[in-house]
Image (cartoon, rainbow, N blue to C red; front, side, top):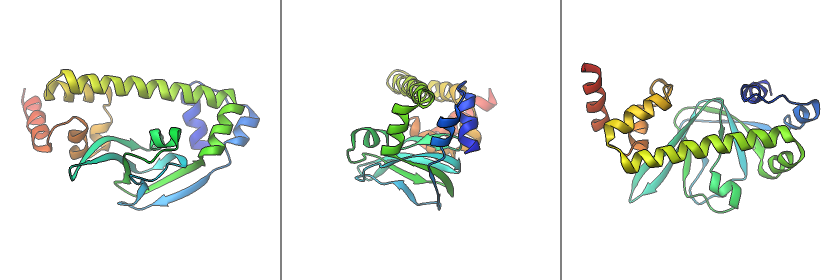
Length: 190
């Protein structure tokens, strides 16, 4: 519970005792590298909070895996559209290393949102941050060249270079890994 409370405190939200007690109704799951947290076509019935490890979000397009994002420790994770709409997931969420994750059941989570202003505020802040990030990334993909996308990505998410393998970063940027290697080499020599 402490890990989630620290996450909430970093967002400037103080938990009341009742809210703290409500957040203790979770399960912990351990997944191995290669396991799916949510598979394309399944319905997301949980939201998770990653204690350790990384989960890639990707789409299968014409037999190719296209990375949308990589969720890292100390962050919430779910197949968002499926979680909200109860529809089949369009994306796969797979472990790229061993993962330990806290799980909240969807119905319990939604009831907690309605009952506690602290959780509602955290959800709102998280959604706003993610929407700004998505819009920024879409703008970058549509309007900029690969090198500029990489520089903007590195500036916005500096920890990703240390945390996430280059092939996933390249896919998120819409470029081939070898092209990203050339960009990185060019930037390091200049």
